[in-house]
Image (cartoon, rainbow, N blue to C red; front, side, top):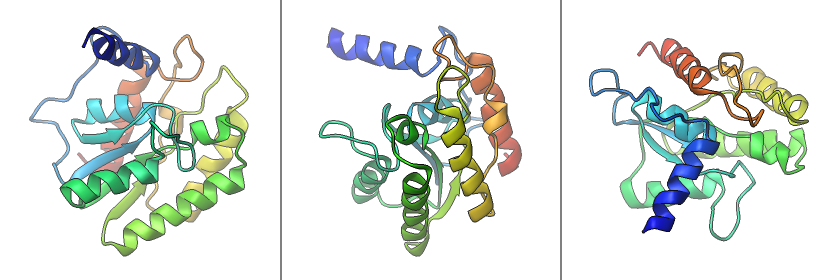
Length: 190
């Protein structure tokens, strides 16, 4: 049990959480019919939005492994268990480009996931990922973000709101995550 608790704390720190993150309250939480899915940025963002969050660190549209499923696989697992949400906000792509996948591969996988879930009656809204400043991921991730905005008219474009980045140069700081969540709320009118 201590290992699980320590792992969760480490994941929270890596996701940019501080000792006192800005959690949503029942009064300002998103409706239960709206879920957040994606990677470590989705974990911290979902907490701030007060949304049901099905996110895992180190995952992406194509990136996953035997113990950590990809974002589409995780979405499918949870929908099979709980049923589908009305609206699904997806924050992903950084881990894909960070693992060496091309912008075209990541963009195609995102488009396919969007089309499949929309065909199932789910309102899918991509949220552009905060673009990291401390590594070489920023150029391809910005290109994936640009593709999502150009291809899916209802994409929530908050990539620039997730700054400043934390000491890892990858995840936003607490202030960055708060600004990112506020940007998403503004788009949703929540």
